[in-house]
Length: 136
Image (tube, rainbow, N blue to C red; front, side):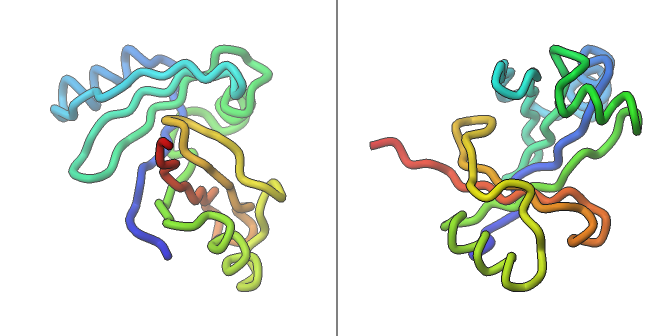
């Protein structure tokens, strides 16, 4: 089941300039800065109500976000929906015609399980579903 909008992912060229907008001008609280070497990016999580804006800054040009920025420039990269069972939602959404980019979820920011769906099957938006992984 889809629970809520978890976050909006925003690709940025200059994280300090983006923080000046989102944190300083808009007054959003910076909750976390996370280096994610496996994805070659640094993620800045800014709280807005029960959701977040996730600023995505590449650490290498050949990363997914680096390539995105080179092709499209800064802006909204994806919309993430929090789900309670990512595998069940993957199956349900796939049956409805949405095409996952990978067969299996993987661990993303904040240790959440994540899975993305191709924009050509979601009306032009890169859609992420994510599940909070409970600590044992």
